[in-house]
Length: 147
Image 1 (cartoon, rainbow, N blue to C red):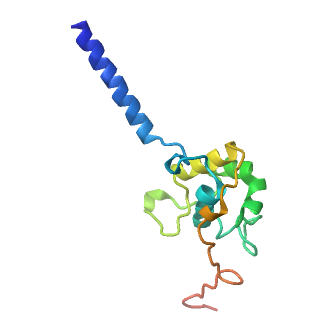
Image 2 (cartoon, one colour; image 1 turned 90 degrees about the vertical axis):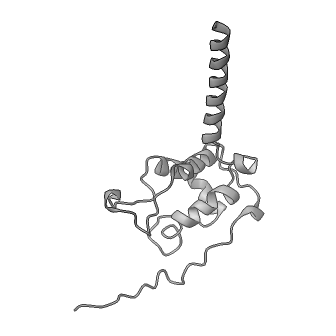
């Protein structure tokens, strides 16, 4: 009877270990390497940060390229881990908003892993195409003007 219990216990430990490994892939492992700016970080910055962090906008520094983002790697890590950035003050209790730039936990983990590993650049060919931002900032026109 004790052999059967030990066998079941060993199988349970193996299954649980496999499940934990499957649920928590390290950032960059899916593509077989360390987290790099061009492959892993730039898409996150484009989607969630560059609307403010580009010339002429409210962000204090541009984050359009590796050269611009690299000096800020540790500050980026601290800002996203503490959820200070990107700022989002809408209460999720009232629903989902289409312009929500909040980061998913996997994105935060990717940015932190990049900073923790020395912020490697990676291969430029892995970069997504640059976002084409409107000249002179956003050109949003109001539906009506009340004077």
